[in-house]
Image 1 (cartoon, one colour):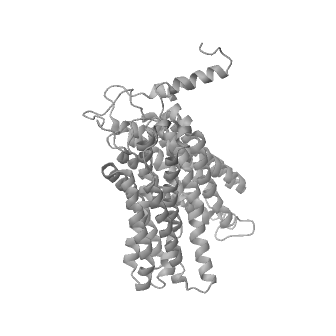
Image 2 (tube, rainbow, N blue to C red; image 1 turned 90 degrees about the vertical axis):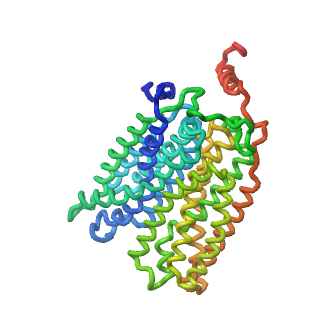
Length: 466
């Protein structure tokens, strides 16, 4: 299968770099289905009872682990396979991501068919999670190499697809389940199989389209800055050297804190809006609110990442932390005055910056560590998302429950949570403030890769210097 090798994906003369973002979108619009997986939760609690849960049916709390496992494996696999993705090339990684993602659905369908939840954990959680991790990072460094003049915009276009995929996946999944359901059957297993086939085809189309630029290629009319900007390096940092730098871990915390503040609220948006405005916000209106948040999550990824090309990544994150802190502090006031519109306005901006944080960080890494290993470094950084996926919901849920147990009315139970989220963003502000250029001792020397290869030969037993 040599056609998957990096050497077979080098673009020829006349290839348009604008074909690469659609290739990346083929991947991200598929794996972004993870944000819509909750549509299967209730139907999967009625696999036996059909119309309502029956003895032997799976519990909602047990089903919640499917998504959690998938997100955890996403971060882990991105870190473990990041270097392989970078060195093997985007086509091989995207092809493998499509295979793992589809296998996740096929194995899960079998688990649903025989009613074994552990097989669903293995399918969607483990195999699907590997597909998520490989698919999420595979187009990143390729896009940055094709768009050295607009790296934020380029990665924003692709990662926007991950945030907006639920708009396609959610209604498609509901429609398929309705088509396959019968009075004695829910239709989840068949839907999984169909989704697996659809996503496999689209992801492999993306893998076929993608190309890497030829060595020395640059956009027409583009010239490297004569003077190196303070936080944009012309040097590359080896992946395992990058994770030893304080800059990597400061950016790790910058992303983790920004995501923690957003993801906890995103998961509780429906309940929060109804509890803070009892009698004013219906369940249907709350569902609409969640849809609006998803839209701004998607749009924010492209908007903020594109803005970062003009104002810089560090300044973009300063915007996230300063504006976000003010908005989180304002949310309790919106509940006090009963202003639903002001509440919605606060959160659509907050969620746009949540999505923008994901889309801006690959370009931030490129600025700090160069383009050579940015995909692998991004893979390690995604572990911040895995951590935030635990921190955010735990903070929101447990603080809310503690407030209610202490006698605080439900309408005010989120006030302390909002101030805690604001405090997290203040910490993130100072982490971002401390980021400075990577010390030159971490920069790769011209002979670095040759030296790595020679060490490998020596370790295999060949004479030194042969």
